[in-house]
Length: 357
Image: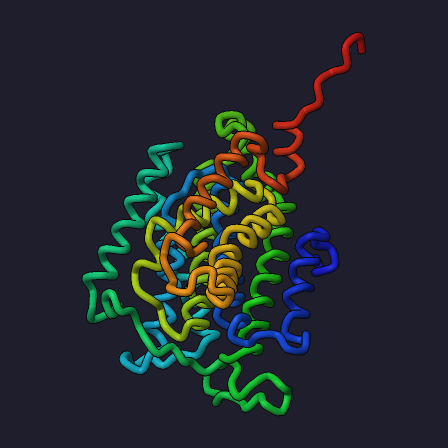
């Protein structure tokens, strides 16, 4: 499966971001501090979409695996610990460890469904936050782990990439920007292949009717574990990219229940089960929060609309109101999302039969 066979919306998004650093006068600070986390959150949302959109399992603790990936790369690369691993090794281990923790925590709860499973995953997310805050010798507590400055490959010193016009180090802009974008593109291709495979079709079967799927010879337990493992692994990889881009893990508040809910809202807004819809939801919600809102507030202050920086006049102060209003309107007028998959569009917008036909 090649990139050219991705849906047009995904190709358009990837091409637009790939061209951004090539535009003269583009803001390097925005590209590094705003767009790189945006790519990480897109991978996180795609991982959650495997669990919720494809397999139909309501998961409210995906941010915990996002945090596991971030702290794994932190522990393996910060000077405080003796490991001093490279970025490639840390990313592989972050993905594998997150997937393994996902399987280990999900295996005892496979008999639970719906709200009960959601409560268990919510509880795991809260346990993770509590552990991070209290294991200060390992996680740095509320301060996190810094600095995360690994070499790219094991045993190889950082090359000077200035001759290529990419900055003095691969961790800077636009080198790491393209690494994160490439990871997002690879995730989209991987998930497209997966959804068209036997495993992807089996996920759809258990999502629609688990009893009928089991009667046809499918093993719901193994299929659920596979979905959770892949979703958690992608979340761990996203956390690795996020922490490396920030050069630190940030505090535990970056991986709390609010992060899980915002990620789930991206799926609902864009369209559950549809990768293009997930990307659209991330661009609208996370893009509004981390890219558009700071620009609007800065412009308002420059125009002296809000010269004193009063909170109630800042767009950022109203972001949760905007999110809630958007979700209410979506659930009322377009419950399948802005860019639904073919199946969801058919189920929720089946045309009424013509009278007399």
